[in-house]
Length: 137
Image 1 (tube, rainbow, N blue to C red):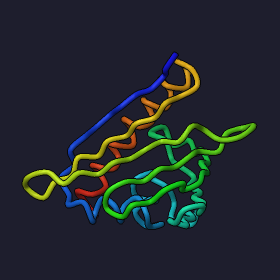
Image 2: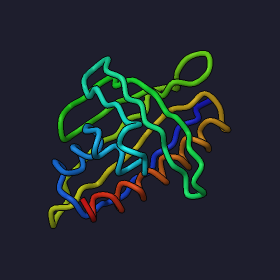
Image 3: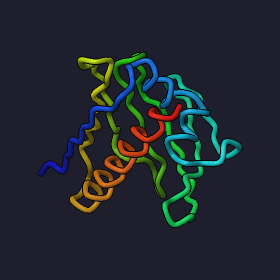
Image 4: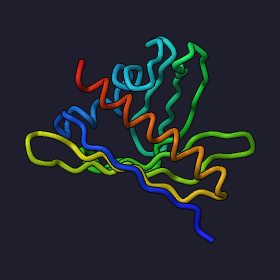
């Protein structure tokens, strides 16, 4: 049985700006609404990322993971650290669309329906936060 999802959003920014938002500490802090001093980004295959995300209610949650694949301005594959291992790879594809905008698409094949629902919801939130960030950056 497959527990995959796909979510997509067109953001009002060129591909290069969206890519930089995901691969720099400043951009990652902006997307995740984190204090800059809590962000570490090693955007290379096998590199690690660490960010303490600030939720809408002010709560903080540390997130860590690994960059599996990076194709600049096109594709990023990451995993997130979880107790006992890591999540299945999450793929982010970027596609330039008319008007200097970018379609950002997340896909992931999860291990259970619960994991899929949680990851899909998180991806949808991140797409909204990305859109908010690139409008002001």
